[in-house]
Image (cartoon, rainbow, N blue to C red):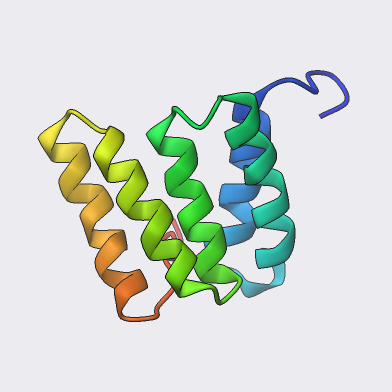
Length: 105
């Protein structure tokens, strides 16, 4: 972050790890929300992949209402049908009050 403090991608990538890591030791919903909110601000709330990360972070933090809201917002910004389908799978999880987890390699 010190090297590129205006990089939305760096804040987003860090937040994704904190929100979705399969290893619980590395998850931190609160810090994830803080980091990805900065990414959303830097990208003017226009990048669906970053808003998707915000939804995942909210879910990890236990705020499923906000996760559903943000995931729906991200889906609205998408134009690709395959991406919409992918995002919709996470939306379903958040509606079921479940966080999203990456799968371990």
